View 1 (cartoon, rainbow, N blue to C red):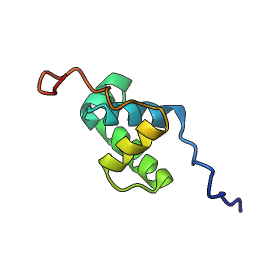
View 2: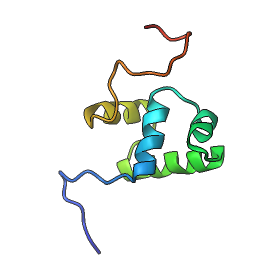
View 3: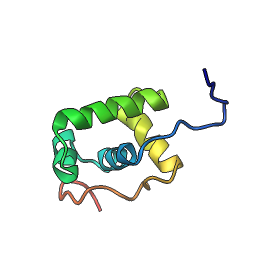
View 4: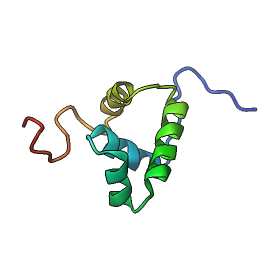
Length: 85
């Protein structure tokens, strides 16, 4: 069985990266599903798998990871009029 070194980040699939980016940009599971032509349940499964792979347990941790890894920036968010510019 292969072991991970402390410095090696777990790899996410392209689809997991897409789902993660949209989630941390503020889209709900249903919205992500509509955008990627997936069911809400499939998005939830991707989210659970992402959290398991990254050993993270909440959305703020995923946001921090996404910013550090360059997947998104602190300035990016969905085009929602309720959110500040």
